Length: 253
Image (tube, rainbow, N blue to C red; front, top):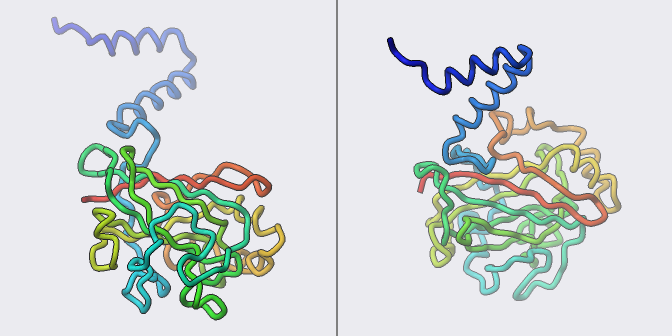
């Protein structure tokens, strides 16, 4: 006679001890853990969707190339560098991105470079929008550490008409290669949660964002409406102390 597995014995014992609802909850948790594989930290073991860089990338694909400027490799994006001098105002925001390899069990990708940019509190993009064409704030590059992580200090972006609040980023295979759009290996966008957006936009300086946010949803946004689960950042913090936005995402190197 074939002997039952220890797992079968355990399930029989549990069935005798637990009410049906608790047993189903236990089984669901066990299945979830079994399916996580290498992704036991709660990060996303899926390839992030490829998205447009938009009309204001500053990577040389549409006009000016900020990636070629001395000073673009930095952590704090709030103040312009080089010939620029302005500082972007707004609720403090730290963006933490963790880059993983979806073809290797979500292992971290160290030594890559991530270029991040987004609009200011008024919905303007430095280098492009009227009034800030001579500024380059809210743009910067960082190299991923041994955990595949980069951290940017910035401000909570505003919401402009027709788009959900977001930030853009491009991934490069190395810091040395992050000098032109032609070397990038991935382009995507990060979405910010509605609850925190509403709280931030109730503060001084984000007046236009209140109206613009009311006119768009993640489901209607031209970028995120086809699915945003892999792009929606998790946020902690508050409007007084600032927020931390975290996103774990994968690419195929």
